[in-house]
Length: 162
Image 1 (cartoon, rainbow, N blue to C red):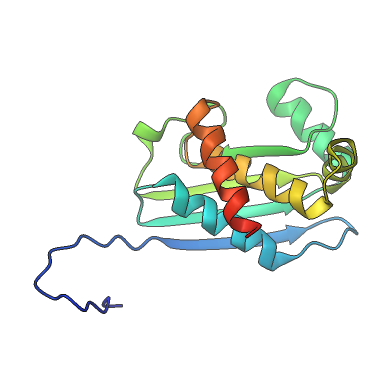
Image 2 (cartoon, rainbow, N blue to C red):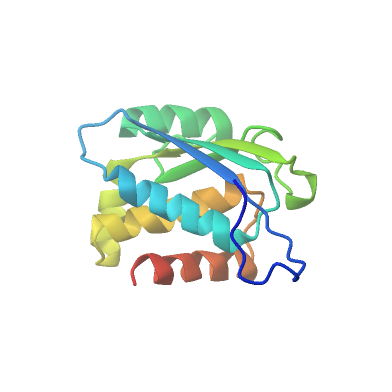
């Protein structure tokens, strides 16, 4: 697709990143797929990721399944709200410097834990879901916990809720 430009003499580098999102809900909780797509796309855009494509599988799993996965990959025998996997580098080997031009990842979310956290934080389920999904997306993009990562996550939340 060729970009339309009002100023053809200006030299502007336009980067188009293909973002593909697959959503699999293995729970009974109704999930808004448009919210999921909006959060992921907004977070990817704000992150400034330099990639040709971003392939993401978003899975909603029950507490028992989440506990099993969390135990296997983190050694913790409990459920959690979100786990993210950057498939090109492997789990916990993330670095923005080492990402390929085609990023692929998986985010596993547990709606039951997200709902519990939403009640504790006195926010809606959708807001809490957006918050943890943005967080997981940033991890897939290679971000580690830092002030800049949290600022990007907060900015994504502000723009999503406008």
